[in-house]
Amino acid sequence: MRASNKPQDPGAPGFPVVAGEFGAVVAGLWHGSLGRTVRCVPTRRTVAAPFGGGFVFGKWRVGQRAMAAAEWHWLHVLPMLGLATPQPLAFVGRGRRTLLVTGGVGGRALDAWWRKLQPEGRGGAVAEYAIAHVAPRVRALHGAGVCYRDLYWNHVFAADPCGTEPPTFLDVERVFRPRWRLRRWIVKDLAGLLASAPDDVPVRLQLRFLRAYLDAPVRGHRGLLRAIVGKAARIRRHAPRFG
Image 1 (spheres, helix red, strand yellow):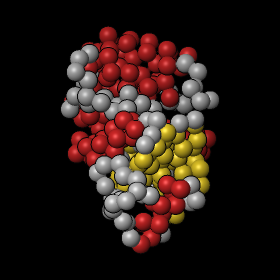
Image 2 (cartoon, rainbow, N blue to C red):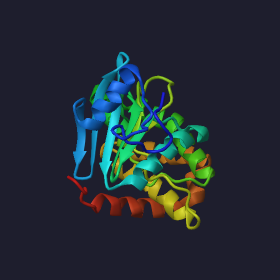
Image 3 (cartoon, rainbow, N blue to C red):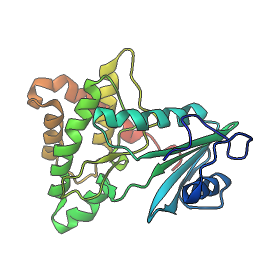
């Protein structure tokens, strides 16, 4: 269920009433009376709230209405390109403030799975999952002329990296379809994955991931590989914006 395709104000006349438990959750998230904060930066806060035996995420922003609208848009479009995303449920807003509500996502980010399972000798399963399930989806995304711009392993979740359920891609507000210089943005996406990989992921596994992405031997793409490695080094040197 979703409240609207356009931002609405839960307190304004004519706001479409969402009845029942879900409506109460949306109102509680909007007014800040419900939910546990899981991330908070100056212009954005994400909270988790119980709903329907599971949970939902509410992400409210101040002064980023265009970005909120972009995320709402891509949450609907990316599944048509083969990338699972959190289920979009509601998009409401007033003035400079917006709230986007999505279904909860279970599991862990793939970098967190690696750090958990690698000491147990099962890190290879995480790498195989990424090679089998993430690489071809990123290839399909780029093949459609779309780039992520925020593609890091902490934005790729898996319920079970030893299973076959597809990964879920989070934080899609910066996804876009570049008009030109597509290769530049492809390099940035792949460099983001390289830069965010845990330090103990073997180079051979990273090369296997790239080979799976290319669906071709890496040796035929040395220029692309050099560009990715160089961009990854620059990404690593950046200080996190909010720590």
